[in-house]
Length: 474
Ligand code: SF4
Ligand code: SF4
Image (cartoon, rainbow, N blue to C red; front, top):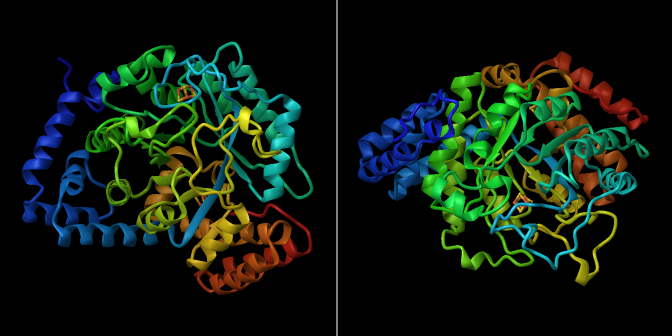
């Protein structure tokens, strides 16, 4: 039997099944212990985070009053650390060739009727121009695992192509990468290609389920997959993005595993995940989410978001268009700091809609609004949409980034950058209605820049953006 050790390099030890089962039993036996629950909440208020065990007790709690306190604290921490800014991004699917057998994804190799597509360099260019013309500055590229069709050289060439395209005033300034677990050497190459975050979802931390859900292909190797972030960090990538696919196994198990993964990275590398994503399983081509028995309802989903926010206050949280407008609205206040907008989850979907018989979506999008509609909606809710990509371009990554987060200093960059990148969006891409709302919002938000000197710089840059200059950042 493996023993729990957050510092171990072995997945069976840092995501230890017995420790998770013990944690869940502890959470069950203490979920009505209001003294302990309040102690945990008091600790959370110190904003230094919670252990997987403490956070699991909060997640298990069924007391309405305590749950309200959890939500209140999550909202407060969201406001304190992230203000009212929401960073926007879009996925870009490069290829749906895949040799794996993931039972929940329509790109699995057993799907013989889905058209397999892989973008050529010219098609990447066209997709990126379409994304730039929407106003996007930050992408997450996605590709199935296929050593023949999608080797690392192909991914690197795509990244290089994406960064090289400057259509009108457009530019993709940060490319995050979501590709299969790979070698330290390949991670080093991704780092050299100047990626932002390396994202890899664990899917499920429950090893036995993992092996069943990934019956064939290299992804079947649970340990190789689970230890991928360690190799990414060994390769020099210090911003990594974790996540599980809620619906595959029991959510409380996944939640504990996710936090143990964060604790492992923190204890070995001194920095936890840069982001955590919270996707829920959705229908897709040959995938019927109803056949998976661990789906979670909207209230549970909101509780998970709130508990993650409290447990890892400095980790950004991402919600995609797997969620509809109503759910996104609810979880934005509880801790989400990044959302996608105007997304297409098919290969080549931004240039033109796919014919019905040639569709290649990875999942059904639940929020089909345009980016402009999403930007306008955010502002009407009181948020500042941000297209900021400044940190990794300024060398603020890994522990350097985290220490700025923990001291709160990062806010001095985030807020001005949000206003300046929003201004660029309004000048170049917004509808007249969005522009009116956005310009008024920027004027109002300038007052919230505490330092006069910084405020004056931003005011100057806003004028320069009006005059045609671009890409100012702190
Ligand atoms: S989840 Fe990823 S690895 Fe699995 S089938 Fe889909 S694209 Fe392939
Ligand atoms: S300044 Fe850094 S942390 Fe803040 S929004 Fe920009 S990239 Fe993100």
